[in-house]
Amino acid sequence: MFIEIIADSFIDSIRILPFLFVAYLIMEYLEHRAGDRMQAAIRSAGKGGPIIGGILGIFPQCGFSAAASNLYAGRIITVGTLMAVFLSTSDEMLPIMISANARAETIIKILAVKVVVAALAGLVIDFIFHKRDKDIRIEHLCEQHQCHCENGIWRSALRHTVKIFLYILFISLVLNLLIAWIGEDVLSSVILNRPVVGAVIAGLVGLIPNCAASVIVTQLYLNGVLNAGAMIAGLLSGTGVGVLVLLRVNDNRRENLGLIGLLYVIGVMAGIVVEFLGITF
Image (cartoon, rainbow, N blue to C red):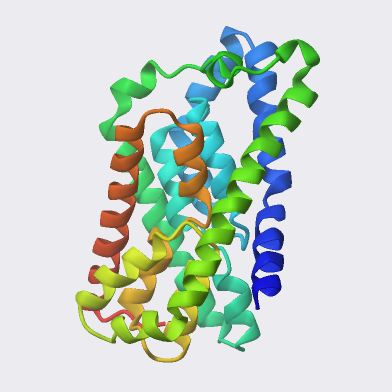
């Protein structure tokens, strides 16, 4: 069992490697090659970033949220775009739904709700913080991480990628061991099919910075333990390892806690709205 947990942790972590590397490569390129025009273009593109982020996040891969965390830490994307990616990230939900022979209509509805909530929330957040976003700039990545950029952007990006990968692998291993010790049955027993309460608790489960969170929430919904609202709350607040990467690469701890709290509140509120509107999937 221990060997299986190690293998699962390694596989889950290695799947995001391409996304991490691309994100760091973009950041290194912008740091070394981009001028004022490129930065202005990024700021302009950021206005529609939440819509793009909301769409990209639905793909069954938590690497997008990890990449978004890195891009936000470098102030390349706006806070609204980051939240849109976090909220729409589906992680393991889609493959599990497909393997369980869920109706295509059900899957499309769930994804549509996630995209709409993510995009709207991101746009509202960017509108509220638009003054701050006008001053957005690319951080000096090399100074922030004390890297040796004279080795070129490829080596520097690879160095950052390996460092974050090892960090994610370690945390994922610890979380998987903890989940195995507690047991998914115990988790399911405290998330009953209760109005409001289910959404509140499911949102907390979704915040677990591990791909297992989406697996647990989706399986509980398919088994009838969670109602639609609670399931949406858990899937919206779940970011895979996105939050984990954010905590590692963004030095502003107070800001990180605020973003995580905002993510949780939006997820739970959306879940409660789904419950009271009687939306079913």
